[in-house]
Amino acid sequence: MQVLHIIFKPGFAGNRKMKILQINSVCGIRSTGRICTDIAEILADGGHECKIAYGRETVPEKYQKYAVRIGNELDVRIHAAMSRIFDMSGFGSRRATEKFIGWLEGYDPDIIHLHNLHGYYIDIQTLFEYLSKANKPVVWTLHDCWAFTGHCAYFTVANCDRWKTGCYDCPQKSEYPKSYLLDRAKQNWERKRKLFTGVAKMVLVTPSYWLAGLVNESFLGCYSVKVIHNGIDTGIFKPTPCNFRQRYSLAGNKVVLGVASAWSKRKGLADFIKLSDMLDDSFKVVLVGLTKKQIKKMPKNIVCIERTNSAKELAEIYTAADLFVNLSLEETMGLTTVEAMACGTPAIVYNSTANAETAKMAGGLAVECDLMSIKKAIEQHEMKIIDHCAVSRIYDKKVLFDDYINLYTYLI
Image 1: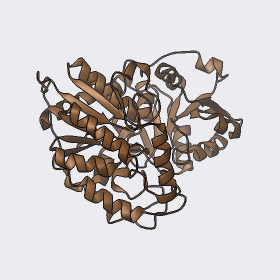
Image 2: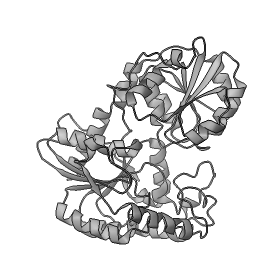
Image 3: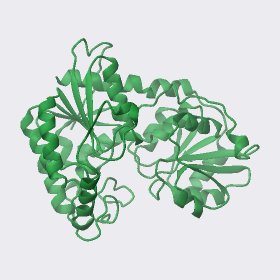
Image 4: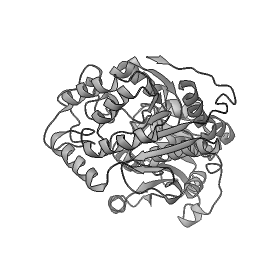
């Protein structure tokens, strides 16, 4: 693997107008969908053209001008059902993909930019057979590890390294993308290896050096990799005073905040519940992003808030907290940590996967992956505002995602 350390001068992209196609499971929603639309808007501002081919859920109205649907909801359900039975995530939706390829050939983009290809919406064999023959530059941003495993998107918690030489007897068969019957990890790994290493003009992008290192150990190590961190909207994620503490009766408490788009054991939900009992009454744990079902099962000593689609509201909550704590064991970057620190709130994270890299770049603290270390760090941490301006300079999405535009131009 060669890590691309390309330094682009301002204005490198020049006046050449480009036509870009992005492919992702969703468009304009959740982290990867918002990254796609952020890139599309930066392209549009520069006079370029962009479409986002997606496979799932609803696209917010403001982004529909970019959106092209691959298949339909019924197709997704059939693909998911095949995966549940036959462990074939990514190897369904053939007819929908063939129809999409027909549209793609007519659109004729200069660059094809891949994002998440899992999610039961596209047939990777049909897609990569086309890409291997099309002779077009391809950029593939890896948001997790699914591209180089036989089944899973993450493997750190499972302590599995079979992906390095060839998956088999998958210990995470029942994890996303779930298979209730067959285990085809070995066959999937081999099929992916052959498909994914057959595109001559492909460059990989990762949001962290940690993930780039894993790519180097996988069969994708034959490709060059450029690290482009995920960025934030610094016009929104900044110190934003509000009455959050009054609304939730938190006056006098030291607020320990956790945020996730979907809480799970991997994201640290069980550890937060334990932590809430370990801290004394001067602290209050607040969790954002819980489902109604999860809230019903949560202990009374945790302030539970459902997921919010308002970035401004999230910035207000980050600002109101004394500490942001990320107990996730598997992160390819950890964008919530950046958002919190950009709002002036210091962060403490587990020293696991890309968490430490992200936190330390912006002045956060990474500790060993056990709750006693977290408890000690929280109790000893001086509750003072960090330099949010420095965080914003590092993670401003306009600056970071300009690197994509420059990468496109470089490849063309």
